[in-house]
Image (tube, rainbow over all chains, first blue to last red; front, top):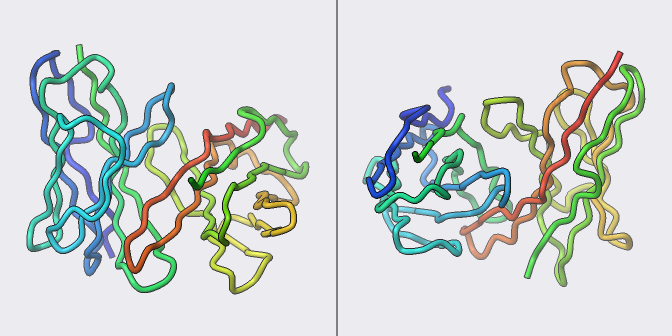
Length: 114
Length: 115
């Protein structure tokens, strides 16, 4: 069974540009969430999507957005990139079921803003 | 608000020695607790999770963790460290509302294993 797949794995962008990252969840998983990992702030929750609806949102500016498609695949977009957006962006998926949801992570997309 | 605190950003042990990574949570209600491991340039891999079924949880690669409500702790242990255990370890907490869930992570503990 394939895991969570993220593309691209590495990318370099210039300040002011925008970027789109893609995530394919584990087959059958309907919840997709995104996290940002930086040395200074650690792992921070961005947002979660379930059945194409954003269900949870972290404390990030509106430049960070996402969406989920009917096949559960998800994309996140960052507009007007800033140097501080350089980070590892992790996508995670879960079924989910009632009770505890085991959340599985992808390998991440490394974004460098120059 | 839920939070987790990991004591010690760096832990160094000798190969074969006991590994103890500390995690304390702050919560007014019993949370779900997780330990994840991250190897260099990789994503997060689930080691184990606490779901209130049993206080002692066994995970992969010989790791286990014990939930202690009185101490609000969920420390990760392994009896004998191996060189391949060198990685960064994250404790996380979640409070699913209905079927929604999100993880709040600790700051991580980097484990170094020496010969």
